Picture (cartoon, rainbow, N blue to C red):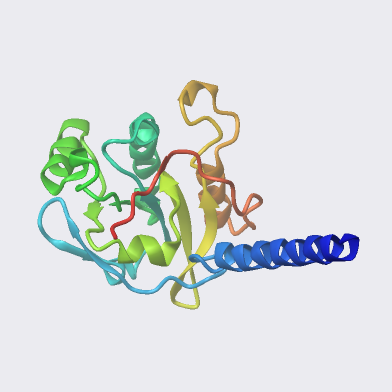
Length: 209
């Protein structure tokens, strides 16, 4: 009986280790990692026109932010995202916002509501609808908001930073570390990005079945 219990414990322990290993692999391969080149995508902007990665071939890089209308964390970052675009678009490092949220779960994320929100807040950058969620899955988006800083390397947009915009999801005045701002500044100055990734804090993306 004791031998059987030991064998059972050993089996459960091996199974747990295997499960953790599999989970880690999925976590690592769930989307782009720092250093990966981003595949081309085409998404509909709030003006009805299609925006593609190829439209930015003259850019030095870009700040891709997955966000949404319904999420309070995303709303708390709206003004900060606008400020980032105002600061860096003129330096060929613009913002592109993408909404991956399923409007079937949150009606505030419908295309019409996206247009209303962008108009009321005065977005100065494209606000794209990822209706199929294919682009969000390729990036490996977990939450909104979640930022990806891309820089051009050998003619391709390559991931240089993934994660939070800054370290205070609720109060911009309380932020001490400005991850996206620092990453873009360093890239424009030819310096390495110091913080490569952070864990995003926000609303979980609701995936379609």
